[in-house]
Image (cartoon, rainbow, N blue to C red; front, side, top):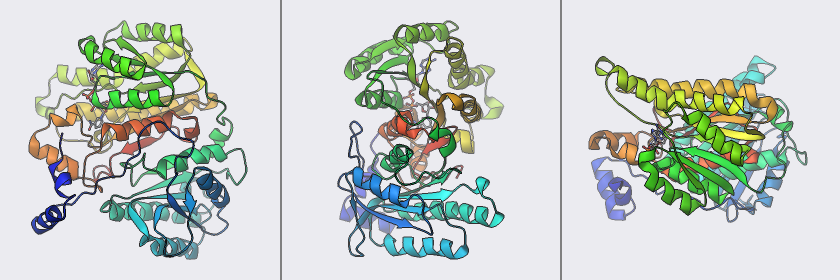
Length: 452
Ligand code: NAI
């Protein structure tokens, strides 16, 4: 679906027109595509700031260099990625130091720049004062994200758990994955996010060599986000079983052929499906990645919603996930260190009028991953939700024009995301280096104002 406002805003005359009309002027976002590369940050100009002891700073600097970026110090040089180690902030003076140093770098940030802040986890702080400062950094990051969004930039914050992973320790590969994703252009539509980075659990499951042929299942693979995800995962070496309703078989076969995977036409609501899927995995397994992506909407206000509309949405969006996982758990089909990603939605966080069924199902997904992540932590299996905001797919294409137009703009980047943006987030959570993230909700929403 073409975003005419975005097109218009790329021309000087269009910008003048939009400015006269008082309309937003979205920036075209820089994006990176293709398979994950050894030097993901090649070409980027990275400035690093450390506050106090800054225990991560030297590891971060080594990572940035290893990823092919140029570390810049001089005041005149533009900066495309700013990384701040604020994990040691424990006084108001140090918080002010963050403000002053980031402010000094801000003018040098290029349009579409990435800012990544590492901060302490307020809940594991030993003193209330330190907890206050750690939380203050979250407010700082979210507010800065709103300011930078106008220029297509993003700001995200990682709350680092109690075990510091310093320079030269075995934890560095874990830090590298986070820096690659949030510091580069695969996270263009992820902004204003605060995520818990659990070093203690992750340190016990450091990434080993990746199996030569990793097995992934993507449900709803014939749809917008599912197809993009299957494509992206195949680029990173996954053999993808593409699942969708039998009615979508033709599209599914074509996709499977394109990504070198296999089509598995199955209706997720059928009673026999969990066992059939488990059989298919058992014949090829063990399973490295499950992406529960299939989803439907049946929008109606609560007063008018039929029981059938409620049931169908809850069955596809939530019950099918539980039933499939039960079947896979019962037959122990997961590889140690496997990954599970469930599609939630901003509607599951904020609620949405006319979507009591959909919002309930997507909020349920969040409750599910939070709990399941704890259950599977000892086996190194991570379970996360990805919550897209407004993504340009068939689902949003079916919205009435005015609602669609408003939906697109209700975020800091003033535009909708693409299926590839969601696929990149899923590919990151599927990677061995995402081990410290589990039980999290990664929003791919351009810092949506809903549920912020
Ligand atoms: P889509 O409508 O393009 O694709 C969904 C796919 O799921 C379709 O191919 C459909 O056939 C499949 N599916 C539905 N019922 C099924 C069943 N019973 N068995 C097997 N497959 C079934 O939707 P889109 O946009 O790609 O969404 C993917 C996921 O992302 C969904 O869970 C959706 O709720 C979520 N999402 C999407 C957003 C957006 O803006 N597009 C926003 C927030 C969440």
